[in-house]
Amino acid sequence: LRGVTPNVSTSYQDQLSATMGQLGEACGMAGHAIQRATQALLQADLELAESVILSQTDIAATSSRAEEKAFVLLGLQAPGAGNLRAIVSAIQIVGDVERMGALASHVAKIARQRHPQHAVPEQLNGYVADMGALAAALASGAGDVLLSRDPRRAAQIRHDGDVMDELHRQLLSVLIDRGCTHRVAAGIDIVLLGGFYGRFADHAVQIARRVIFQATSRYEYPPVSRPGCDSG
Amino acid sequence: LRGVTPNVSTSYQDQLSATMGQLGEACGMAGHAIQRATQALLQADLELAESVILSQTDIAATSSRAEEKAFVLLGLQAPGAGNLRAIVSAIQIVGDVERMGALASHVAKIARQRHPQHAVPEQLNGYVADMGALAAALASGAGDVLLSRDPRRAAQIRHDGDVMDELHRQLLSVLIDRGCTHRVAAGIDIVLLGGFYGRFADHAVQIARRVIFQATSRYEYPPVSRPGCDSG
Image (cartoon, rainbow over the protein chains, first blue to last red):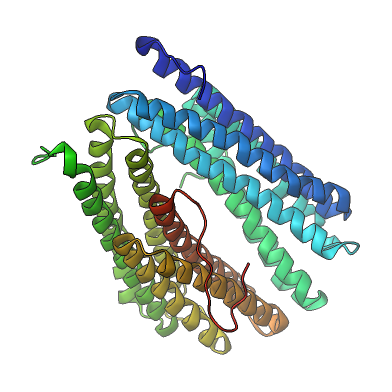
C-alpha cells in the first residue's frame, strides 16, 4: 500500500479510475482465457488447456490488486454516498471477474480431462465455437465499459448476453435431440460447458450493469435500438 | 434511515449483527421459496408457482434493506479495516441472497410454463426432489451461519454443496442416458433446472465462505471430519 498519499479533492476520482482500469485489464485477461480455452477444447490441445488453467491465478491476482486499492479508498475517510457506491461496485466487480477466470479454467479442465479425445462431438463444434467467441467479446466489451462507463455500450452487452442465452438453448436442444448418438460422458460435458459459457456471459452482463449503476444510480440499461432485437 | 444515531464504540458490532440477522431472514425466505418451487414443479401446482414468483420481490426487498443498513454503516466514519471487510461482505451477501431468490423464481417459472403438464418426467422426480430438499437445507444452513458465524457449520455447507454437484451430475447422466424417451423441451427444462439448483447451492456456499472470511480473514473452511466424506 506504499505510495497511497492522495490529494483528497481529486484522489477519489483518479484512484477510482485507476481501480476500474485494473479491473478492465483483468476482464480482458478473462476474455483472452475463455477464447484460448475454447480453442483448447475444439482442438484437444492439452498444452493450451494447461496454460489457461494456470492463467486463472494471474486474473485473480490482478483483480485482487484492484480490490486492495478499493479497500484503501474505502478506508481513507468518509467518501460520500456516490463514491461509496462506486467503490463498493468495484469490489463487487472483482468477484465477477474472478468467477469469469474460474469459468474459463473450468472449460479448459474439461479439455484436459478428455484429452487426447475431443470433449465436444464434431456436430456441436459450431455452437461451442460461437459461444466461445461471444463470451470473449462480452468480456472485452465489459472491459471497455469499465473504462468508458458508456451506457450504450453496456446496453449492447446486455443484448449480447441474451444472444448467449439463445445459443445455449440451441446447443441443449441439438444435444438432446440427437442425444442418442453420443456417449453419456460427452453429453454431460456439453451440458456443463453450456453452463460455463452461460455463466461467464452473466458475469460480463453483471459488470456492465454495475458500471451503469455507478454512473446513473439506476440498475437499468438504456434500450438497445437495433432492428430485429427483442427487448426483454 | 431514522433512528441511526449509534454509539460509536458498540454500534458497529450491534448494527452489523442486525444487518447479518436481516440477511439471515432473507436467506430463510429464499430457502422457503426453493422448497415451494420444487413442490410446484413436482405437483404441477400453478398457484404455488405464481406465489413463489411473487415472493422474489419480498426477498429482494428484505435483502435491500440489509444493504441500506450496511451502506449507512459504511458512511458513518472510517470503521477500521476489520469492520470495513465485514460490511463489504454483508453487501456482497445481499447479491447472493437476491440471486437465490431469482433462481427459486426461475424454477417456479418452468413449472408455470409447462402447466398443466408436469415439466419433470416421472422417472426424474426423485432427483429433482432431492436437489430441491438439499437446496432448501443449504439456504437454511447459510442463514444459520449468518447468525452464528460458526466455521464448522460453514464447512458442513460446503460439503453439502459438493453433494449438490454430485446430484446434478447424476441427474444429467440419467437424463442423457435415457434421453431418447423424453421430449426435447423436457430435456432442456431438466438441464436448466439442474443448473438453477446447482447455482442456488453455489450462492449458499458462497455466503458461508464470506461469513467465515469475516470471522477469520481467510477464505478457507475448516476441514469437515465426517466418515466417507471426500475432501476437495
